[in-house]
Length: 268
Image (cartoon, rainbow, N blue to C red):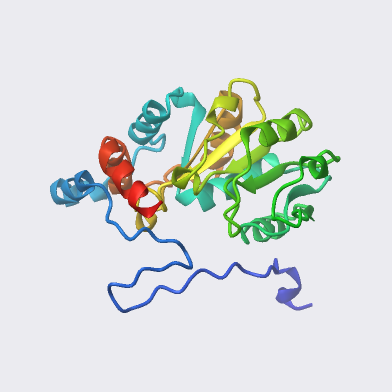
């Protein structure tokens, strides 16, 4: 019998091409045209290269503390990963273990079905309405979990907190993940809903609004029990996922809110 019979076969996600020519603004992957906050350059200038011989902090304490302070939550409510893709992948592995299908829109981020296939998670694509909106009634069916971006991508449609809360109320037995990769460019984050719904996991990224796609920083915010489960899985696989330079730069950029607001404002 061929060894290929045991290979896990999936249709891979196709990342956007990275042009070799300088000065190109890539709209297909929405790379930010502005550089990171000036403090990031200072971190890189001052970094001692000899420190690279040391493993990074496995708990990413500095970065988690900075994120917690910035978003006014407790450190035990924050999980970090190597880009939001890593965070979502870890969340799929941790929370989507039911025999019931997970639910996500039929027009959405094209990575969700790839993760589901990799981890052998059953899934169901839910059609958007004719005006590309989510109908909350479609998510009131038995399921093993729910995920969708808000604003959705690639449609750019933003759903209200009231709609998201309706979905949360109808799915208290499932983890509901809201992928807020683009929330800084318009709309209100679901963060205010965390106090009411322990099954809500909010995922954000530094790649878009923080101009740090090349450093790969993503994070999730949820109740401490959700975060503990995520960390249990993460530490069982690889404790050292975030390098030392990235931890420093990720914490530093959150200190410059004026620069952040200026850049996102220009893009908006």
